[in-house]
Amino acid sequence: MSDRDPIFDTAEGLPRLLEIMRRLRDRETGCPWDIEQDFGTIAPYTIEEAYEVADAIERQAWGELEGELGDLLLQTVYHAQMADEAGLFDFHAVADTVAQKMIHRHPHVFGDESRDKSSEQQTADWETIKAAERAARAKGGVLDDVALNLPGLTRAVKLQKRAARVGFDWPSTDEVLAKIAEETAELVEARDELSQDEVFEEMGDLLFVMANLARHLKVEPEEALRAANAKFTRRFRAIEAELAARGKTPDESDLAEMDSIWDAAKAAEKAAAKAK
Image 1 (cartoon, one colour):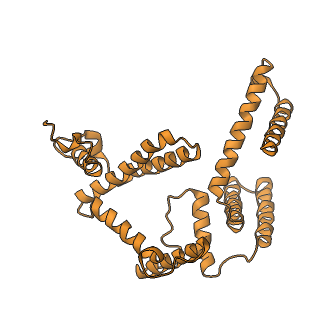
Image 2 (tube, rainbow, N blue to C red):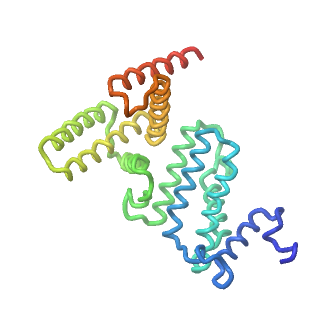
Image 3 (cartoon, rainbow, N blue to C red):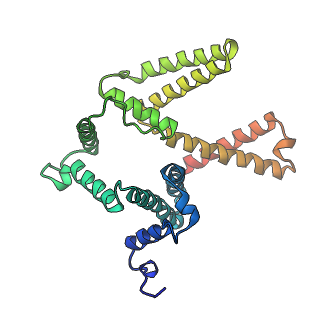
């Protein structure tokens, strides 16, 4: 190949990436693995790359974020190339669609509406515009276009928000907490007296109501759970470190000892937080 081949021109940016993907999918000269893929097989990678972007941000791993964002961009390019091959749309249509959407949903920036309003009012206006867009697409029901493949807690909150817009919502956290108590009692009953299938169902009901409580408290449940996961990991590692200092492994310890170390690690974290 000559040096003028666009895939070797680092100044080309996005056009370079689009051409690389086109060649990877070329039926005669491309990569056999890339040629075999379709929307369904690539979708899990798209979800995975989005999580890896979020992970880099959460860890403040700014040196990794550039690469992770590139991997996520590649997913959009991949889907757009497959869509182009199928005669559905191309990358430029994707970019134009989202550009038009951003202009339409920000009349206070690109239109004649005033910017003199709170972020809360802007969020409310955004949701109003989105609702009008859904109505224009003639969606059959309030919940119809809430994505199925969202993480469970995130989808639960979105479903609840949609229902709340038409008045199907508890007025305060008091009713939600009462429902949690009810669902907890039903889960205990299922555990003690009913089948595993019914335990499964009641566990789902309880998680759904917990997501509703998070929504009422203005807490993002996925973020809260990730933070709890990180806290658990941090404190369990403190248990492992302390046991190692005592010449032990967790397998050689017992619950009472590990729980005592956990409590000490928890107290140390709280003391450190107060000292800041």
